[in-house]
Image 1: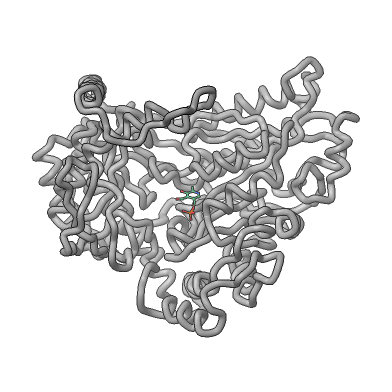
Image 2: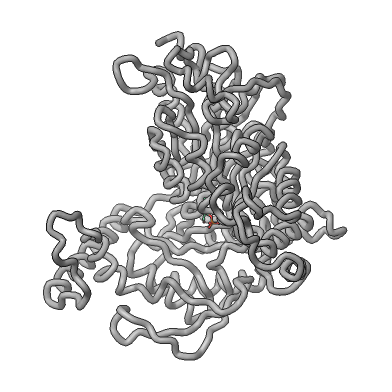
Length: 585
Ligand SMILES: Cc1ncc(COP(=O)(O)O)c(C=O)c1O
């Protein structure tokens, strides 16, 4: 056993200084000092029969047989020089609520539930009930049905707003009313144009005019809307090839493969390289698409506390030490860590350099989902890898979507040539799912060219910087206001904690009246006591628009009591143009 642990120990030195400024705001400073020449294990186990820190046994023969299949339990060895990441301070804020706020939130929620149960008893829903199904499992979960009818229905008007414009820095909502307390809605025939703080349009490329829209339109004239086939059949056109080359180049890796849907990129590719006998270590806040993909292949899953590197290390140690459950303690076929770049509900940024150090130390693999960080983070918009100045080749599987920063649709997986070739052959998504629509591919190519400055302008760089400045400005002003916000100072996802369910609804409704669209998030998407309004910033927002939103938010915060923060506030005026961005990188 001890030998296993020793074998698991890699050659990366990691030091961490945790400077806890106060209990309300935690600043973490960490330094990575990996050795310059590192043996990088690609696509599986080390050649010497030591894998994830253990010795391969004859029971791993199946594993060895499949070694040619890229990550499918095979192993390849390569010696590469990897880049030393620079030191970066992570400033993340997690001010906890007062005890009384938590208690009131819980009490108000239980009152809501009690009212729900009473009204269900007094006014049973006029809906179809399952009949003649003796011996069958019920089709519907009773609690979810109750919750959506008697709790969520009361505030249903705050969600699922139909829109009738491009979701740019402004968005047009279709007005609707309910005459039966949220059971049904009718359109009024009017529309409301709102400042859009709700859509994931980080770089403002969700546009109906301009070079990207024109590229998409030209692609329709040349290729039509659909490829009429999955990629592995007759569904690959020149745009797909061009997109994949550009994506790999943009991310600084050997190769990339793209898919028509971001969710499916996770759900349909993860099962190609996991199987029973593999161990997944997954961040507790990971997105549903990752969870679906991880559950499908029947691998063992252990969840670590959100962004908690010590907990991750504890699980890694245990995994290497104990191996698989059972008497033989057979070693895991492989251990894969799953994290996201920016977490879309928390606004947090994964502690990538530390996670890379751990994955090297314990010879595990790393799957990084950059859905919310590609384009939105880093000096050159290349995601958290760029933000921390890490080497992209240190991440075994780089995943991302084209929905958020690219104003398009679809997803990619990028990494070594060998692994991407393996996916091209084996991915369910490339074999069985329709290829990305050509105009969508054209939009993304156009955005990538702009971000890389290949359009002959500095528009891409300007957008990246505007988003970074907007983000810091908005977050700093909210902190001055005294509301509690969560997450990283550079994360364009800004959750404002409102705690009570009723306050989520009050805030969303008031903001819409003031012509500002936001998203409310509550239980079960968040823990019971952590209801919030989520704001997504964009490079498309002007300072004037942000100031208007801040003015309205402050007014609502005073009206409904949202200034929960007890932190000392720096009230010095903030000059937008003088805000420093990327100074730590
Ligand atoms: C982390 C993460 N991964 C994957 C997806 C799925 O991507 P898409 O919405 O592009 O299908 C999302 C969606 O928001 C996400 O947040």
